[in-house]
Image (cartoon, rainbow, N blue to C red; front, side, top):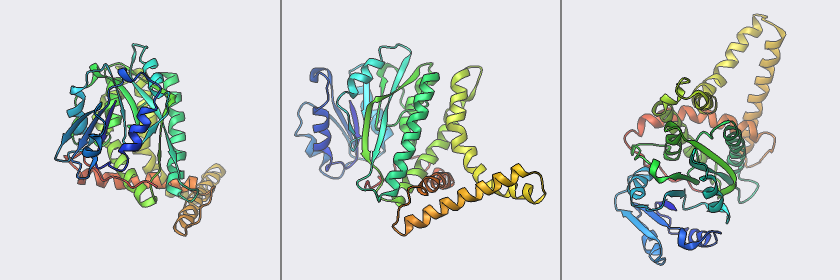
Length: 339
């Protein structure tokens, strides 16, 4: 098991207790922490656990660089990766190992579950709703052929299939897992191995995360462009384009171009159907704006936060474009405060 960490002294004890509670033979579970430029007492806290292996690099170069340094030192055939601040269920390891009995599986994606400390955390609630939707898509993708990517909170790969990835990669977990499909292997998905963490502390912190993900998504489309070849990857090409490419590129643009286009159609009397769609669009955007007002005033509306969070995600794609061009040549990103 590999845990990449940066300044995680406050979570070390809880994480190690979580690992200790896993239902898996201790003699078969090798634990490695790769600390990347930590300036707090993370390394000192980890020394209290003599059975684990620690790799440390004094200069912070990002999670991708930490993985590239650590994975070649791992001796086990299966590498399970999890974040320091996420806790996993007791049966997760057995479930992941079971799925690797299928030789066509090169990666296993666990489920990510997001918790809110209280019902007022709009960011956490929105993130939690998004991940329920994302988990459903992963399950459908896997039932068809292969999940499209794995979340770094809990995923696993066959070590023999690992290739170092560029250090400026923004979505290391996505690129690493999708690399398995490039090699002809599938990404299995299971809801029975799950990791849970608290959502972002507030909508501003969540925005930092979303713009990085959007930037990483656009970067990933370019780096995985060969997967869009339907001749070489007939099923994966369809899944990749429909699940990832359209979401990170066409959808945000469409959201802001359909209204003026439909307005033109309505006033040119193109047909009743366009008027109905136009009204529904305006109602949706009005609901999203209402959700925004509720959030800024500290009030949470269960109905309005769904369109609000949907628009919030897509607006951050445009921020992600700027992020991509201002964070070239580095995979280092700012940690998000959790609720």
